Length: 234
Image (cartoon, rainbow, N blue to C red; front, side):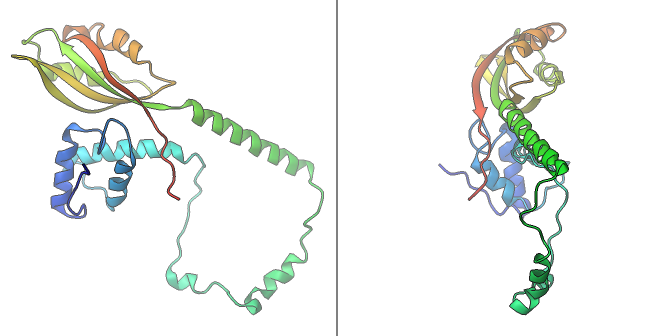
């Protein structure tokens, strides 16, 4: 069933979206989708982070996922006004000087050594960028973090989890889930860069080792999904 929100340019719409994202890392499911893109595009202006904490967290996360899809270096772009665009020449008389200049171009000149070297460098850069993009896959992981007993401070437990920081690791939304009477576990989302983070090492070497094992008894992987690259709209 489709998720519905009021107008996201209104305070009511932003408030509902912020409450919706309180326990979620994505609009639907456990990985980025076109639903996230649709809501991301509908937010014409990013709300004040202090007022809409969950929207700000989600917006930054989606922006981080979208960013690698555009691997080219940006040099800046200026969009002219409609009035300036109307000044573009359309008649053959307006285009005549440009056509005359084209007569001076040597379209079939031999390639110089400098041009050949530049072309080789561009080709090598494309291959390197393609290889890097292929290697730098991402995954969305849902983790169960269990305390020792009903006396474990769950707030401290979550602080221990989120205190673990490393390159390629991004913590997401979390919630407490009832296990048995009086005992709850922490369920938390995280996004990892596959080449930089091993979930098994994260659990064994960080979450369940000292000093975090004072609060954390064990961790289980509930869901592990590869994040698909966003494809541009045709």
